[in-house]
Image (tube, rainbow, N blue to C red):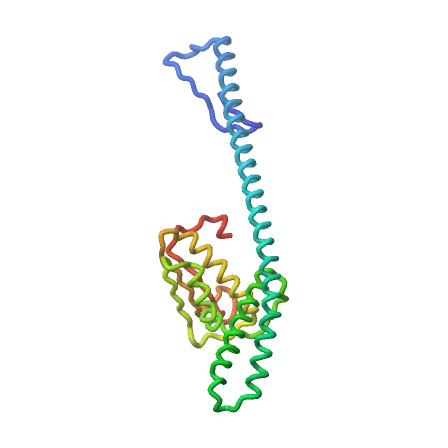
Length: 240
């Protein structure tokens, strides 16, 4: 007796007897009704499963939207703080330049002022990263070194992953320059490092490397940045 669900035969209800012609018309009618009941039960279970999956997908979408809204708020705050911070930095750097211009090369105050000026430049790079995170800064595409980007990001990545995660940078020193926005590349690294940290709650190792590779069917060599960790991994959906 075929089991049909929404017009598709998904199986059969088989009833056996040791004797030929052992089922009369009434019994066959009952067996057919039983097969219909089984089919209806399977159809109901399928629909409930589809409904459950739909509700779960809706919940995940709402949760994801909530997270994006939180990130957007954080981004706006980061952008606002970065702009204010840049204003203060301009004052600090400006006064440093004025003082340096008035000092002789041998003046003992030059070295401390130069260190203040260098620290100001480093802070300016950090505010640039905040502006890139908030998307208030237009992309600045130019030839950059992946090795330098990784080295400049070492401290912030180490703080991001925490003391229980070992950060390993493995860079090819002779890698070609690539055309990219250094701030955006650092943001990518920060996002991947945060994901890696979440995948290794008990600690582990995060490795970021650069190398050359050749794509199948594509001419030439390509600069590649690879990120791997010893965490729980991911299934196909987030990988896509």
